Image 1: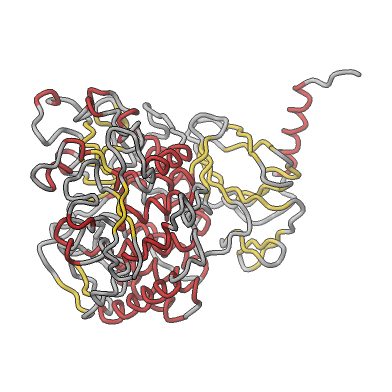
Image 2: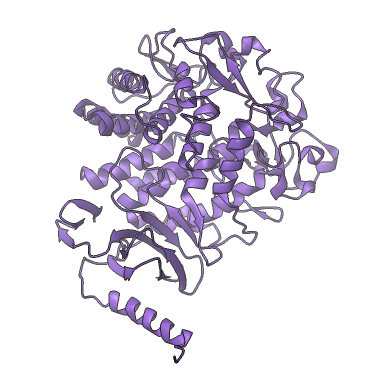
Length: 577
């Protein structure tokens, strides 16, 4: 039998690609991309680019942290807490940082542990396919319900289980984002792990408390924190956190999806309007990016007209106000020989101070956002490429020893636990680090006298790594990532796989698409098919320095254009503009 040459197959495939984009199906003009100014200042691809296998990283992390018989030098990082606060059940604690002397089963009655740590670890594990409702005989998803603070009358998820350990750290200072973010995380966890006993009651209570809070605030979020029992805002020594409105809006949108109560949507919009009515950025730690997602989602589904570009600029350019978290934003540039663009933290503190937890968390809302406003696909793809490459630098096994504050400790967690932060310059005054930039570091030794250098290694910061693990898959072209737009898009219908691809190169690149079914591939940015009749795999061309948002449609799916929306099989909207 005569052999058919490889070049012949290539000719046929290219021909199919060309025929699929020949204009036979007209779904409108290509979406013009909208820039984010600070992203424009980032490299198209970092010079020091390297992408970890984040999915494997997340699985290894879960195995290490939830190992009750951890034989490493640090020992077990998990313990049981049988104080039975709020709910009559045993819960568990995780160390915030390695060898943190405030924590463990024998310190502070075993009650000092943080929901932002436990919830992020459970969410991250669930996102990469680990069942945390049945692991080693424990239902961790049920156990975290002890963070629902009913004993103190707040009736929301909080960062600790009770005020007795409040002043040991973790927000009871009072610090508003510590009170709102656990509720966003809990809603996300409940979507990944539905139908856990008692969860729906807690979710309903959270939504009701947030409705009450937004009603009382009535557009004025000028507070450092809010008392959810007495329904009153307060200003203290901590800067005001108007972006808590973004967290309220996100949780209430999730509650609206879950319960269908129109009051939740009404107050979601009310909170978002309070956020967007600010005269300047009030970015503080974690909540503003959730508000950006809500604005984009509502613009698409409710035909609102919120200024998403303004909100993005507030995140990336950061807070400039002296009454806010001054200097908090997205870092751009090189520190020493390392590209650090895309990381989140202080742009100004000591020349810059980035944190892993904060750098991971924006991927949660920003990647699914492009389904609803695909004009940001290129900007978000470029940011994510820079950010996810730089996130590796927090891990002691992925940065040179000379850039580590404690290189002698680099192997104590088998590279599973990162340093808390990455500073442009050391702020402890260590002689060997003079003139070294950047430096992996952490604040653990500053939290309490006696905390060792090991406390620079942050369990709390590493716990959300599964967010990256669920979103990022490397393609067969170095520097082009497949970003799963459905992975962290909670409480919405997701009938088809959707992926964001960004090409950082000055020429078009062709990647291999691995299909989950016999399918056709449609790009909602270009508004055209890029391949049809794909079986196990097919080729997709990504234009030079551009992005695609690919929807994988079952083969033969019929698309039609209605009122500017592209609808599949007369029921599923795949593009809103």
